Image (cartoon, rainbow, N blue to C red):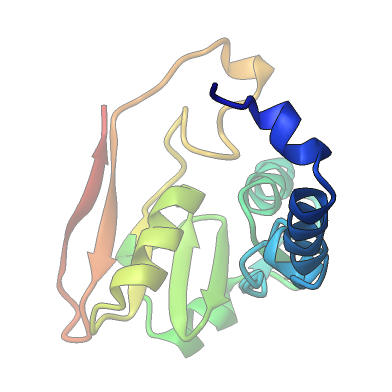
Length: 168
């Protein structure tokens, strides 16, 4: 007659071997079962130069912070910073920034800055010339959801540019 698993456990010898196997599991380090998180990367620092009273610049900075960047703001205007970073005036906007060696001019979306830092092209940086409505910082309630088409430009070291991303 076949014995059931419960009947097998009732015998003293079987009970000891089952308990010994269970005790072995207790010796497994708890860290094997713990949920591990990947090490966090430091959030990139974006240095921003802007006019002290510019509201759209403040909104762009909030956009960056909401998308994983730390910011350090200088309310001294951006003309000197733009010149120092090698951004031609034709690509100018109301604020200039620097992140990990790249110039960022104007209302560049955080998504494109992350892409720039990932791809690391040989370039001066990115620019969204002027102040297109609908770009980050120019998308507040007063614009009533309007979005003008615009391009994010990759600025080459030779002074030229090419479209890095189009927003339509």
